[in-house]
Length: 381
Image 1: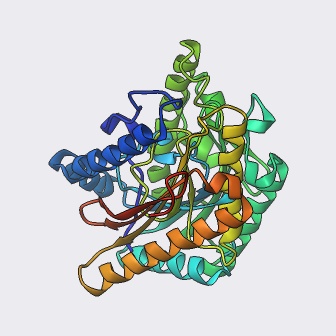
Image 2: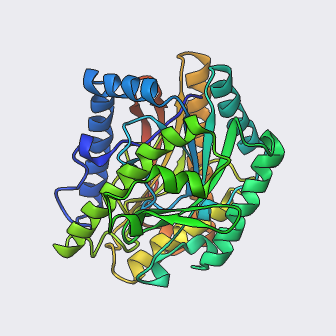
């Protein structure tokens, strides 16, 4: 499967014309319209040309292992064009390359990039908040140290799988501070490079600092990483300006009302909208339950209305016929599986569940809904 990467917010209007307090029907309708606008923008000639130009200038393939938290959007935070970053999402950024499905997909992606003559930079991320521990990673129970240790364990697995010299596949551990949406790069020797600090002095040359932090990072990969870091510094400066204008008080707290299961959610680049669960873990029920718990807490604490939430399953396909039919079956299975898990673990929440299975036409980035199901006062359709 080709990369399914996010889209920068500046390419498409993403802020809803209402707050999180809008009725669930309005929020769901807005979300589908957002998906439609994203597909139209992605198919446009300007977006296509921007992708081709960027890849010609920066051929390193970049993938990211990251949390399902909707605030973690590296494409927006690094001001990278659409379709460049390949995301792998799971609860807390918890992965194990021994998982059969994850190992198969990741290996296939890496080998396809290498066969095309490209190196691969793998960002292994964790996240936290400087302002409030409870705005950190719920998957690790807000324990930043535990999330960092897990990221380093994944790095060891990547080295075992693709080699320890890291000349073709380079695993880079980096934190993501959600208050300022700033990257923090780590070296195995214990050093770090904080984009939030560099944003205080944006004219300071970045390349020498990156070379000193990661001397084993091949020069071509370092050259292709620099635009992401420079984009992140610019993004941090913009984020601080928004905070000063009191436009980010809501954006830094959990306010999700959508649980997404599967792949192909690159249109969901609005902060705190959705919790995205990749179909990787053998124990898929665990991240689903955790996502449902976050939704329930958001309702109980008044961060979102308690009139409903959306469960959206999506599976991408490349070709018509058998592959699309398989995607449809898989999406319907994921939707039903997640609904059963939520119904069993959170029966009160399940009464307010709106369900949707969908498939994604990869080449057109077109989300195709397969039919909606609504659990609630009106019954199940």
